[in-house]
Length: 456
Ligand SMILES: [Zn+2]
Image (cartoon, rainbow, N blue to C red):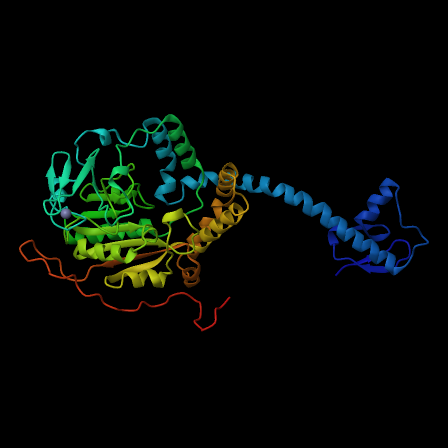
């Protein structure tokens, strides 16, 4: 700790603030002394020459320094963060993430053209192929459906399922939380809505999926090993998921994009817990950030197993350290181990972190700040502020994603697996029952040591 010499009595007093020391011809003196001399307001006369006075002086300097440094620092912090954000902003579009890279293009295109492609409004133009239509089953009684005009009809139970703008609405109203009569023909977005979406798209994001792009490349390779013209079901496919754009651009794959919402990519409306397809219809199924919305998610996983062909590929992503995003429809979070365990009837190909701890921390800060405000406009402003000042944190996940500790604090995890069994030819009969589940317990890959007590 540097010593400060009193210029009056040459006694010393401890002072930890070297910032304030100045070397003068009289020795080291503190900045306050210099200032007071310059202003002619010296309060330290020759008569007050004692160590206690000097110590008091140093303490006064300390308090003054805190006041002079901390207050401007706190006032300048928001401007500093905004400045940093503006500096780093262009990198948003260079980072290897398709959502970032094409964001600007999509945003401009969306503003000019609207988000719904024009063919969506063509009357009677079915969005699923005849081959898929022939494999549709009644969500209520599970028998094959028949096309009649612009609807599907079940001859067994008499249920009628409308087709709206080429999108079959295959909801069993007796068991689902959704209602057929709540669906209507999608209308083009108004100018204000388009501008709002475009502005939202231009804001930096605090999320970064560190695994999806690579995993979808692997998914694609495995699909083509199975079939030259694979068919893939995307559960929750109303909009393109993170990292998915390259896969969606593959013309040789037939996609069926199901959801409970009609949006730019929906081709069929159904409840994810009750998939209206015959057994072994798909070579691959993708369910990205959907499971946690389903009160009976186990039913959905069984359904995926049923509609996948033997040897078919499942890819799932689900949040772990994420706050509530789906409001009344948000039910669960999974650790990596929990996520793997839910898919235990599948043969695991790979699993790991899809969103890292840094992204989870940025979300936590945003939700902490949102907890203070209830007013809708203030909440929107808080979100914008957080996006603009915290988005850079996600890049830390590029360093952390493969570290074992990230597993314990991941924002989200992924699981890729295969339905057991050999691919079967069309001549072979369908199995009576789905293959029994293998009850393998997955390995734990984080760093937390298990104990009966909680570690913190
Ligand atoms: Zn029926």
